Length: 435
Image (cartoon, rainbow, N blue to C red; front, top):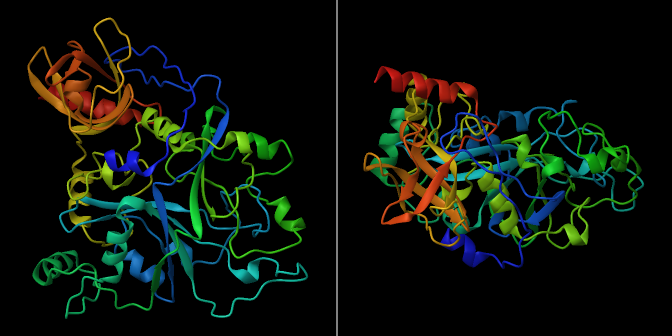
């Protein structure tokens, strides 16, 4: 969290009001920004890597928790894009994924995009399709900027080993080979990897009128001018090409998070007005309220268990794609069906119910004073809000307010986000009743 703060320039964030939350209520309750429409933030905490080459998909398929084979398929009619200048009418929506260590612990998260090919857009003169000299598949990765150099070394194996590690389809052999050679996913495949963060930037659009339950509904501002989610009318009429398709996509994790995209660093993305470019801290608050962690700081690298951080329901994990590094633990935990701890959104206040800001830091213990037991730990804190990895039986048993360890005057309220599948809480109740 500290690393994130130092990397951002925080201006005055939008003012927001939190709804009254009933502590330990089974009913999903979610706070919200007051009188705030759509906002857009450049995510300066994120960086962009570009992978190019004939083996790009094959290489990532053996590393990522999600199935990336769709990026090598022909583009169909199903899209998730919003209308933006000079992009194909049809395109493949991005996906969210992660890289794990051989023990199944979280290392890095990323959004994977397939930018449109040059021959799918107009050329510079606007007189015809563009040209693609090499024709190689290209993918863009939206990654945590705090670990981008480490991730780049992981993919390129710059730290080096005299041994070549060929990715194989036996998870036991992968784990044992990594331990024995102490290498980081040696790249033998025909893939070029480069950091293009100076050229490209990550953006997020979010806010009340973007948080749709129905993913087929277009963004109001786009719909209002006749642009739907599947057909890019502006692309048909664009008169000049560019090297990157400027395109907003539904956030692949949750509809309520809004839209995400990668855009050239020297331009403001479409549908973003000057007065709507908000500080990145506002997006962090929006995401915290939804109970969603992002990056290797909020999900401790080498420690976090992906299913406890809800990555399965954030569409980051495919359970039928086959083997990848760390897959065995994920599959075993998933099929066992009981997750006793989960990441939850938190609110901090005093004994009178008044919000308390800047009193809680990541790493603080959450205690149930009625039993003296540790309920969990705060993973992210910003103002009076935070995220915490808590035992569900302690967080929602209703025996009294949680507190911060060593700060009995700081009360903690945990609540269930609206997007949570109902079976999560039902499974926890059944497990608690049988214990």
